[in-house]
Length: 327
Image 1 (spheres, rainbow, N blue to C red):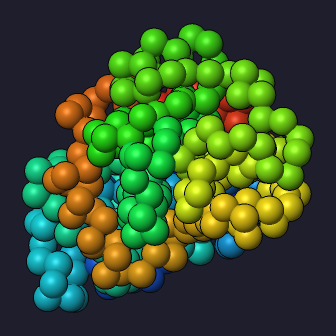
Image 2 (cartoon, rainbow, N blue to C red):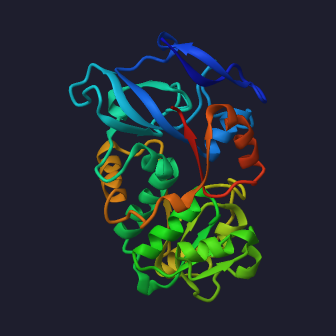
């Protein structure tokens, strides 16, 4: 049986192409998924274009997310026909990924699709939404509450950012959405942001400690923006560090930590423990689920359109979530 897959043939720039594969060409695993939907994340864009060292072997199928139904399984937990999803865990990195019509993975990576979430819904969330779920889990576990002050979401027009805006607002937080894309202002307000600002409008100052303005943040940017936010976070507030669009390094003093008890919470979706993974997906299907998931979808494409969409994502020409139809 042959199927369509996006395949990165070797290391280097622009080495991906649409191919027909046999099932036997897939990396080993004990659950075969007939894929229905995937999505494009920033990490996928790096892998597809060759601008990042994401894939660990070649040739390989990229794609860190997939949802569909079980086609074959030697694990009784996952009978044939069960709707399932996989995000992270090495998918699309050291295992053939979700940008293909069939995906084979180890059983421990597979999460049964929670009720009230379709395969398409699962990929609207994808790693982006799951990452926001980890942020919420860590923030709430560390006593982040609305009375500490507004929550800043940087990179707010992207997949993680836009979902974070809506989900924080649903939980009763005042949200300041930060985006350099002026055209996204109205959409972010509709998602629940109380205010939308450009990064430079934050006026974060340069002192080791500045006046308290924020309860905390979900930061997709890193670099100087993360440094500046920390200087303004309230007593015992938290900043969830999610991304590095502004750079992987940042310099800061210890003043916010030792004088205000501020915490920086690391968020790693790839290696999230399975019990927590199941708990977060359950909440994404229930109390954390936005009123509408469709509002986060900027477009739906097929496999042939993925390389172009990946390049546009790296050029910051995309917003929201890009879904990939696999059937």
